[in-house]
Image 1 (spheres, rainbow, N blue to C red):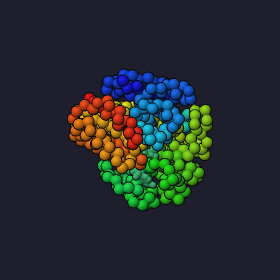
Image 2 (cartoon, rainbow, N blue to C red; image 1 turned 180 degrees about the horizontal axis):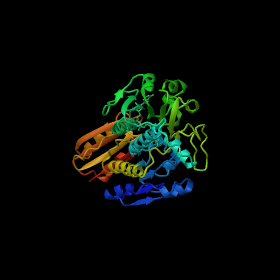
Image 3 (tube, protein in one colour; image 1 turned 45 degrees about the horizontal axis):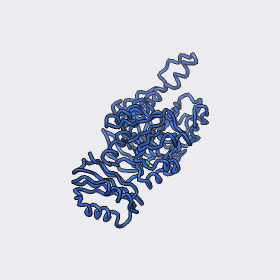
Image 4 (tube, rainbow, N blue to C red; image 1 turned 135 degrees about the vertical axis):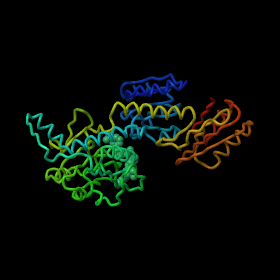
Length: 401
Ligand code: NAI
């Protein structure tokens, strides 16, 4: 029996995946636990599922020596001590793509609303003013959408925008295959000068810090629109505020902020608050019912695949081996110290017990090696015990379908 413990109200789609695969020992918690409550809840767990609020520190992980895998049912994984999990031979999985479509749809909707100056008009009608005018309102059709960062989300935004009749250009630091009629532009400044709407889909971090600063904003077309649903640090908010006040930028939609409130009770501190053609949202670009359901499925699928076959593809901390059917009678997963002789001692052990290896794959990451060995006879417990007792072994598992 594999004991699975899930925290933080993970979508029921995860349970469906586990149950369909025959794993029924599932305990769910609606909230994130900590301290003794968390220690009690994870006792004996082999699979842990969390979202962003449960902290799986080294101390916590040490309380679950039989842990096989961790699923982060979200995008980020910094709530887990990934190195410590790796040193225990525990892969960590997440869901990097499940909310791509949700972000892309929101961005296209915002581009259309801002081109029509709807946020401003909505505000005026709420105040009782009937400003029935076409001034400053444009169709999306025929306008140019500029995408900075043509990765998973950026390329989806481009596909949706073309369906709405927009021209799509993009700027990326890597060579990317353009979808549809999208065109790459190498120089950021030239790119910014062409786009009616600029949308940002780059990663956060040093390299993109204030990528859209006062100079970049000055290079944008007069009257253009800026959308940021990537990371708050990518835009210099004060420079954007000035450009909105001067009218150089006619509207903006901002979903992410350099400093974001930690809870519903903490106010957002931003000079953009109260500006009429600015849409402000609380980092919800990827937050939809569909994305939660997709995340539940995607992470549970990865966990099931790992437990059943050892496939670690998509793990954020672990040597990656792709899914492959078991070739023979049994499969041994051998997680070991990445040092000379580790594989040799495995082969010698098999030979000593007359077990024939029919296929073998090895991948290493830092100090850890991960070998998947298929054999054409059953592997007795004593072999597993002998391997587990070896100094180079971190963990070994037997899969006998
Ligand atoms: P991705 O990794 O698939 O794509 C990022 C792209 O940006 C890559 O093609 C990369 O080559 C490019 N890039 C990196 N540095 C660049 C630079 N300096 N200039 C131009 N291009 C550059 O990432 P994905 O999944 O598309 O996510 C994009 C962003 O969206 C990330 O910052 C992510 O954290 C954020 N995000 C926001 C959500 C929200 O709720 N608002 C939800 C999901 C993701």
